Picture 1 (spheres, rainbow, N blue to C red):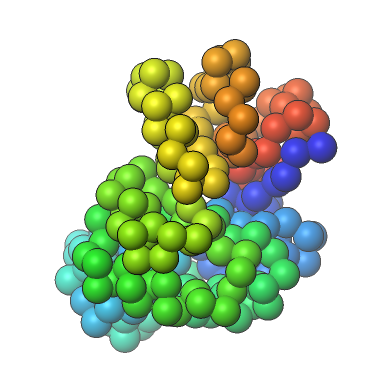
Picture 2: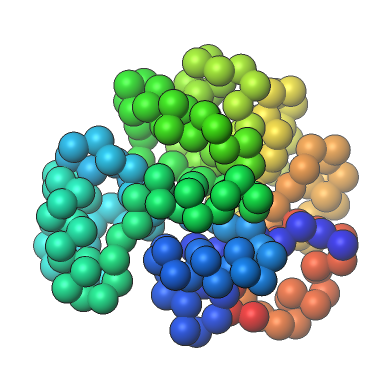
Length: 215
């Protein structure tokens, strides 16, 4: 049986993405979490997917240009309070896997702060589509648990080449690659995202690690 992570804490239709109460429900059911992080203007790490407030809050503004206090106020008014990564770590109690996707390219200073903040939480795995984040984390702390993320448009050749780095623990792959034998045969641990259909879930969960939602 593969390992399962809840995509952004969306366990069911009542669980909105990247909210602390959604994460808590996922943990209650025994699942790990895949979530996204950004850094605010005052260098706080928040669990939030988008670079702007437009989709979730119908407001203009980039996350990186706003202080956490501003984001906290806006999100509380909209009844979708944005949690700090610290809140998620505390709630996980170091019992559940946390795949933390770094959305932007972080400065080395921010990456150092991220390592410091997660120091006591051994279940954290850092993943990113911006691989520079991952390589820089490994330069700072070579035994950091990390994964490289790939979209469906990435060539199989590129994925195989990057998987040869022995310090990389995981590949996080679009579900498109579930049917690719060369990828399936790679010895490295793989997680496939995002499974949204019951039929896909039933078909693939036995032999694969999945990132899923709403099932």
